Image 1 (cartoon, helix red, strand yellow):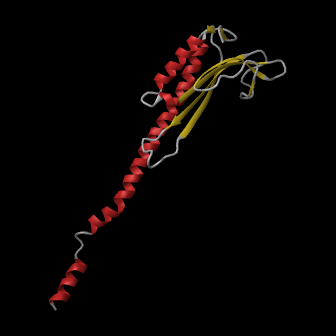
Image 2 (spheres, one colour; image 1 turned 135 degrees about the vertical axis):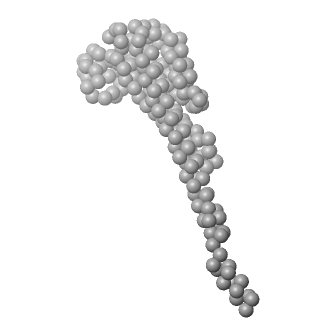
Image 3 (cartoon, one colour; image 1 turned 180 degrees about the horizontal axis):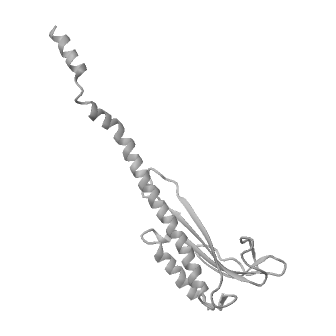
Length: 179
């Protein structure tokens, strides 16, 4: 009889239910929290990379003439803009292009950091209506290989890329003196 009273009391005792429920839900909440934090970090890296592409194009198009050293300095600014993210994972390319009489768009000059420069005369594709025949634009292409701080949980690297187009500010075409 004493035994039956103990089982009845245990069955009616609800004091430990919250602790058990928390123990079951806590791992899910923790994984969700870290996943959200990771998403925010990746989103910030992607946005910073997009602003870097715009800034590189802006700095190149403010000049009438550039040199390899000038563009290299601009790429350094791009590296600095990616902080606190690892700039070694950033690849950049600045390319001046002009629309030809036949409608094709050809490379005038191109320089890259971590990315192969395009050869002068190569054809590239740009959005329709961006420039007319004889007009030029500077195209910056940037990729960023985002590495997760939770590499053990998310081992795959994510590659972000962005292409930005900007017309020269002071001249019809930005010329590279030593490209």
